Length: 254
Length: 254
DNA sequence: TCAAAAGTGTTCTACGTACACCCATGG
DNA sequence: CCATGGGTGTACGTAGAACACTTTTGA
Image 1 (cartoon, each protein chain N blue to C red):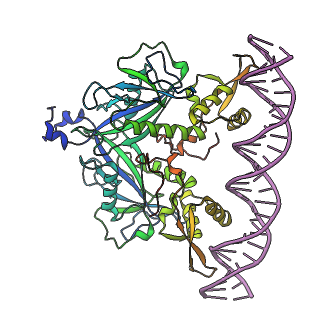
Image 2 (image 1 turned 180 degrees about the horizontal axis):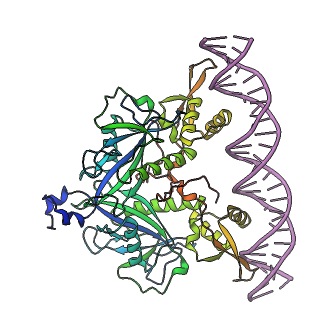
Image 3 (image 1 turned 30 degrees about the horizontal axis):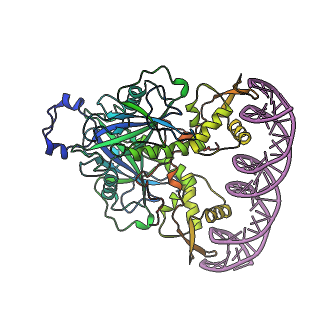
């Protein structure tokens, strides 16, 4: 296919891109840059430095154009793998951004955003990837395009979903203690919950079951280990967001 | 721009389409086709008969390709207007469908689906639109592409959102009684709720406030009228779906 | 023996459900 | 005067929050 000239690009049909917000509890051995907040309870994500216009040199979400022979989810998985060397423990479509002027180029791009969780245990020896760096979500650099909005929406969605499903467990390995799980939940939701009540709620939910193993890791009683059990049905009851309202909060009347 | 030949179309970058699932409580004066279920408590939506391959003659969701100078939401609104002559009382992005083979043509299309609610009161005198018919969601004809999946997902989303937000009120006019609102909720959720408890929950939620007006419409005590009040924050806490799955349930807990 | 996290038990409250019952109206 | 929905009152059950308390470990 012939390349398009400038005026053709401006009125050409919008192309499709896929970008992914990849959350982890800690940065891998790569080169983290943004300094972590002091309390340390923060999430991390990988960014890619752009090497082409527009926004050359800026950091952006891992992603790229959708190939003709690739599904949306496949595209998200493959860019995730390229950026981290890993497979996601959780992957879900987030929202599709299609504003007229978001591309800042002549060729308009509609971006289908995904969000993913990866587990600490999956931190296989990963050679640092070219042009990829990990940042704390609480100390992000300026991002290209509207990627800051995408990250903000992904954080909201993660928080929301963590409150009524067991997604947060995807940050952990196969086997975990309820203390670990509670700390993950607290990190994601930015609160601190009562260990006793958290334990009861978790067990009552039927989402975890004991493996029988014990784990001892400090000057205190060893903890029973649990494994995750498939969600009953949960994540089907999904709603949806209005990502435009990053500043606005409420409306509705007419 | 030159038209593409067959082999070029097969490997060309995917194009973007926008389709909308438009829910109403009753069909307008147009030509409803699918017979309503006997109980009558069902939702309705407009479909468009395809006039071109593929799926010529089949019914499909209102929609079309995304123009270079139109945002996704604008596109959804305009096709909604074309199909119904109305503006939506509620409009929200649903999900983006991008499977490799869903288009059934050489040129691959990624469809951004929206869902919308329109109000009875908005049923302005609408001349019937060419090639548009209204069907009960419980008696849909065979649909083109994967549009049946899209409708199914939209129904799930509507139900889910109706259980924890006030969206259902968008089916009604500016002023309504709690009995009307309850019947709408029951129709959407497919259940029957206790009038007394529904009233209390609704009032306690702060989503409605009395207008002072009364409405009398039968051999019984007149009902107070209410108007909708902006949602507190609600819809920000949005999750997301796994459209592949068709089952559903209710759940929550943490 | 002490600090710290695991784990159990108990109480209190909020909220939804079930259901009895009164109110106002048109026929 | 009665059927019908609007509207109020009340009792019960369940789930989460608060918090006291016991258990088991490493140092």
